[in-house]
Every structure is written in structure tokens, then in C-alpha cells.
Length: 64
Image 1: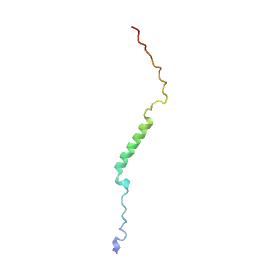
Image 2: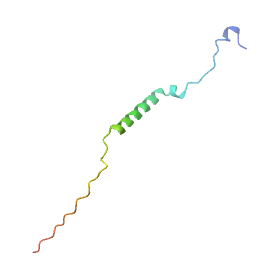
Image 3: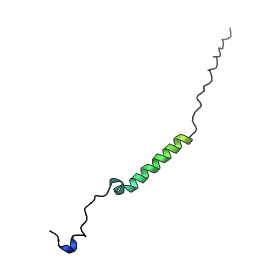
Image 4: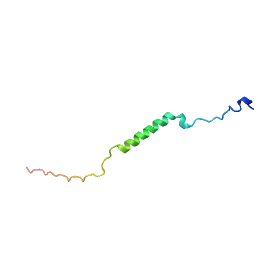
């Protein structure tokens, strides 16, 4: 049993959360995710329309 002077001073142990332990790593991944999302949204995309192919050009050899 604890002495009377320490009964109110004892606190339960609460382990630190995973996010508080790895705060810097979480910030780095959040910045990378936002940068990738911004790049995907703002990057120029290719056109969906492709023009039809040009007809082939045939060259006949000259008679000698």
C-alpha cells in the first residue's frame, strides 16, 4: 500500500501513440502524398483523340 502523501500523485502509465512516436515520418509521407496527388491532378495529360493514320505512299520503280 502507498503512503498517504503518494496516493494522489500516482498516475496510470499510458504508452505514447504510434503517431506521436513517428510524427516526422508521418509528416514526410503526408507531404509526399499531397505532392503526388497534386502532380497527378495538375500534370498535362495526353489527348484522347488520335488522328487516323495517313494512307501509305507507294513508289513504283522506273523501267530501265
